[in-house]
Image (cartoon, rainbow, N blue to C red; front, top):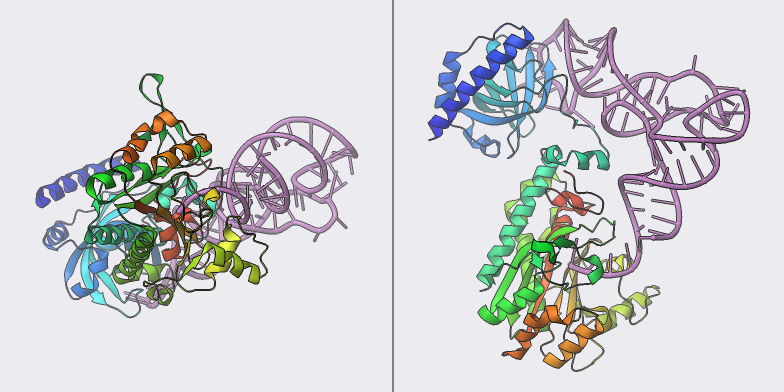
Length: 474
RNA sequence: UGGGGCGUGGUCCAAUCGGUAGGACACCUCACUGUUAAUGAGGAUGGUGUUGGUUCGAGUCCAACCGCCCCAGCCA
């Protein structure tokens, strides 16, 4: 199979080469049959695994990241998505490979074969002595690759997001995101939670109605993009016990801060017969597992980002916990004008999280500032059995959750008070009609968590294609 | 939505008091056998967000609009 794919590749290549030569009127580059044979024998490897192959002839398939010239020596740098590798080729020793690479444009796709050698002068400690080069597609000089190895503005880079993700920094972030997801799911599965997917089309809001994306469903019926899988995961929790959902959620919030996207991913656990304390335990275990997984398996990427890993290594349960009531006192003691009953903004969160080098859990917020489905604290009825987790270093709230209202009458009253369409919530009220039980859960914002772990200033870098207020391209 | 800031070649930036719109990168050519976003020399392309106003003269001053960035509210 592999061989067949490669020979098709060769055919394509010859056709392209011939075509280009005709139109551009250049001399046909001599085909190096020996090199092709050598290439087909050399194992294709990923750049991240290059150094153990020192002394061996291997093939790399990727793109030309940069090309430095020094007389009759060329120093191309290749990237293949797993890393970058410097090559070296001299005119004297490998004239055909030299000619193929000389003047080659940035991001042209190539298949190169050569010997890996340790080399202290090369970035990364090893380099490839190139024997053969096949240019799969040359980026035309008339329209060069738009992203340079220089500084660019944010707006330009976001317009070029489909290309921007090729840069080593962005690729490292996306790989860390993937590791965070894997670590999170492994942890949840190991805790006995079952993944149950929530729908994306929903009949009604579960957060505020002002941030709903309305869509035209079939036959002019109205539907909305989900703001949270929470309500559905409450239903599956009553069916399966311990469950979680992981998927995209949508909020048409008119907020243009570095912590907001209109489309973001949430992991939302829910457990029947669980209480607030269980979820605080689960939340700190989950976040610890995510950080641990990234530090363990993506240390190289964190290094690419220049992230201070020692800060991440300190992240392990238990996390500091503070009640809302005490948090207000802490703020007031620090001279902040916060009053009991105020919600905390970014400044307040930063102030509290600065006291610790781990995420902080703030619990038992006043009910008035939480969603209609939150349970009230029997010991202090003005409070809800809710909690938020604030990331360190000012990255904001990464978890929000708590115990749910399990009483039918109270829930109906709160739906009415929130001006929500009662008829759309009948299925949800059924959960309180048929075997209602205490249950609790939370939502973890993936992008905020990854932004904190990566240390990126803006959340838009940690999702492949960010959707923000006024940006849906590319 | 409110407050603040910014719009100049493909990109990143200069332009003094309102007085000839410039250079760096990118692209091309040449030189260079160890480059590290290579360097040096040369070449071609290409620009003041839009509309109106003030003025002998506007990138610069004024107004409106458009776009972007940051902060706040809200949230994950």
